[in-house]
Amino acid sequence: MVEQHTPRSLIVTFYGAYGRAFPGPVPVSALVRLLGAAGVDAPSVRSSVSRLKRRGFLLPARAGDGSAAYELSEEARQLLEDGDRRIYGARRRSQEWLLAVFSVPEQERAKRHLLRSRLARLGFGTVAPGVWIAPAHLRGETRRTLDRLHLTAYVELFGGAHLGFAPTAEAVSRWWDLAALAKQHEEFLDLHEPALRALRTEPVPAPEAAYRGYLLALDSWRRLPYADPGLPRELLPADWPGDRAAAVFTELHDRLRDIGARFVEP
Image 1 (cartoon, rainbow, N blue to C red):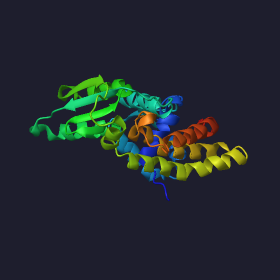
Image 2: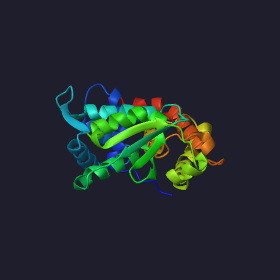
Image 3: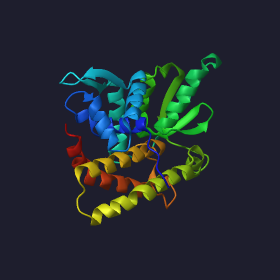
Image 4: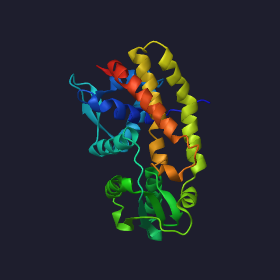
């Protein structure tokens, strides 16, 4: 299986992993060098940075020596901070639920599409048209996201327990596509568990190799805590691969991140 890492995704992953600790805005020359180590050529870096600037994720700035550079917007920083809690935090397993009930006028179809896509990206499952559900621990991030996108006028949020009528595990299997989620975990394991086994037996990698390995693993992993929002373990199949995938990423993080940071240093 060949893993696909887009230049834009790798740039976002870089800023999440290392860019915020950079001393000031990250020079374009540094982005070219650091993304080059992950297999991205200079034209692709520059065009992807331009797209991220148009989206408001990156802002043009100047490095200490006056060269062209980019820094994160405040919105991007908030997105990455929310991501930190998902990607690096302990997997939370809420016993209660968060319901998002929404209605968007037909003449505002674009906002309806945006609302549905963002709820899906946050990890919500679908109970019925206009009724979406997630573990209750996503309440804060959901409120911040809807507020940032000016969508709160269309949504009501509720919290509570599932009272019936189907068994909750059966209902969860309808609200989320658990087979598709399990496949994503298994694909991550297929791609990155062999690398972890090698790290356990081989010498400590050089900074550039550690940086590259960590950036690619993180770029693969960071989507999974959103697709799989931390459903209660007792409601999932007995052979659920998510716990193993999380353990593999955590060990890769512990073994590679700090070594890779030496390659990032200006």
